[in-house]
Length: 488
Image (cartoon, helix red, strand yellow):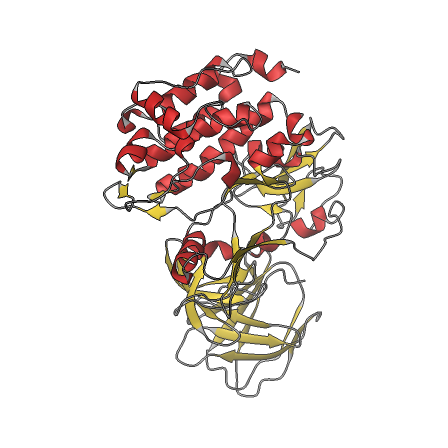
């Protein structure tokens, strides 16, 4: 069976590369190249060379697939092969076709609308947005790169391309997963190889990792007693029934509550900022009022509400630190993209059923130049989360977001307590002017409180980066006393 309908050819002497299979070629009389080398298997050992002549009849090689036509596309070095089920377009070196992972509806002129499963030829790769052509219609436009997959393996729901061993353990240990839940991911230690991560305990405290080894003929195995031709075959024993219905969250703009331009600005920002720890934008509906933003559904709601719930109150310190690390990871991406959030707090962090945290509510977010954004006069801010320089001068930088992150840490460690308890906003402002900082809670490890105090340094330039905060929090129990991990 051919595992991919995107093949690679070399101009002039066309070499077709297939996994092990049997083929029947029915050659189209318009094909004008002089010869084709049919190559089977991963080592490209040529089994036959066909010299094309006008109206050449079928050339049989233990047929199992029937190709109804082979034609050279005009004014190109691409060969088009058609079967009853699929059309293969053979690409010249350097060309690439991707598969759509999700539906995407164009929002602006120049965007390209496509559906999940569509094939797109990538014309230009530039940052987060690529220029592409739909192979079915020939339409061209810009697409978000994380909505497509270069490797068809990435379209499998159980495959996680860039996930780390630690993140695999985090996700598989989440309450939403059961014994036997698994994923296949890229190996961190062996480039080009894969690892299988499996939840091995009903309580979720054990995740085992297995190296997936490759055979000389291109197959895969974990135990040499049983081998598989593809990764898809390997996981077929574990794959659960897939619910094809996807829940979404809908944010509505009430008529007159804000301008359409401001609402669309938030949608466009969400479209341009795409990361695993940021809530994903699915669509925007603007045909008539009310206008809707449709995002991925986060089952547990806001982190603030979750922490206050019975389930959230049972979460132990390691998971609280994990929530902090996940948020820092999302903010590190925003930092790297030269954006600021301006409203970072537990109410604007959403949690899904796997206890993955994602940053949401980009209504105040801005891209900044010269590392600073000055708010308009009269703008309203969440005072208890806002850095002093932003309160006093309306001066926002990524370092003011770092201050807010320190306040967020107090929300997490206190299971949703409002910052500066018992103090009004004016009292908080006056206290900060005198150098006041919130005291450490008894439940807060000294090392975590030290991180908070780093975030609350008076000079913005003295505060840490989110990249640093992510690394410190991800390694929190490695770098600090192991006793914290053992607390009941």
